[in-house]
Length: 497
Image 1 (tube, one colour):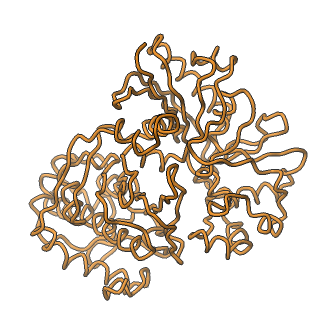
Image 2 (tube, helix red, strand yellow; image 1 turned 120 degrees about the horizontal axis):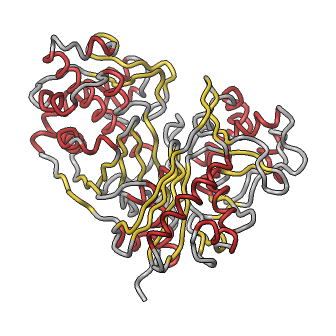
Image 3 (tube, one colour; image 1 turned 90 degrees about the vertical axis):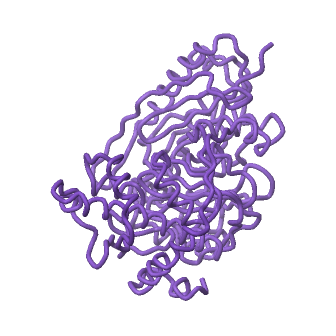
């Protein structure tokens, strides 16, 4: 009999992705289906029924391609903070409120105040888009009675696979207020918030066997009945597993629209500003701290729409002494500092309008602006590690770069030089692979061993010490400027941070 394959499912914002990999991390089969939502101002909803229907459809295509090949297990990840209410029969009572739905934002202060001491011990502050404020929003609309039950996004799929309601995993439950230290729902906080604990699901650690694929799900998906279904993690944590950042001090830096950092630490970091928060690792007594900046490659798309990025990169590589830039296309920052008043800047002025940054008659100015934006992101990345270290996180290990911007070789080397540490570029960094790693680790020797088998590195970058030293004066000037604007703790500008 051939060796088993391991399956991961990623419920993203725009698609459902199913992936099967062999014991060496090679993709054996993959399938995806588009997801659609409803956006209207602060509202962002999806139909929970579509999550299962499309996941089942993608799995059907996947299993057809696998033929009779044995399947070891399956795990599911989803967006963090996406929740819905179901009735006693498990059927949805509400749409799925997505991770960035802000209608409950005004209730974040109530959620924070009710559990401030506990949230402080857990190392974070309650945020406007998190799931607990959404639960209070439903409370205020009288929707929590009559056997209502809060369900996290992946639970819809795992329950359908098993054939009955299943526990949530603690990774997805974090933003609903689950205590990752005490491993329980905080009853005293819920009492202050007038929330019946019966509304909340049972919670288990990621990597726990939730059950096995039932006959009804097997008939729809082609998965063999009896296949183990493993409790997953949020998509950000799944991407971290896919990057192979599973040992203490290792980090995954995801540079897409925004910049997200996640790593592994022996102790729970504490950041009084709330910029850093931590998941519990699916292995050992470890923590997965991190944060998500509002800056990133989104600034490139905003400032240079339709530009030839290859040509801009080649020109930017020749730029020397680019002006200081804080590449924030929108308003407000959440990591590595919390500053709702933060605004982007380039040199002495605000971040330019796209028409100014991409003026076809001034390619030199466009190249300079592009170099400044890319360098600004690298500055934020280095500062983020400084903030994480101050919060108590282990930051001594190698870093893995993933996300769309990691395909830009010049930008990746710039970031590597700015950090001054080796950087790994994995072959397949998608969250669905991270769930395959978790599924394999749950049944065959643990997550670190599974990651070493399934995660493959396509290239390793080494920092140039001379270039790192040359970049530091501008970096320190950037940090001082953030402190002068009142966004950043001044101790970082003096070296005491």
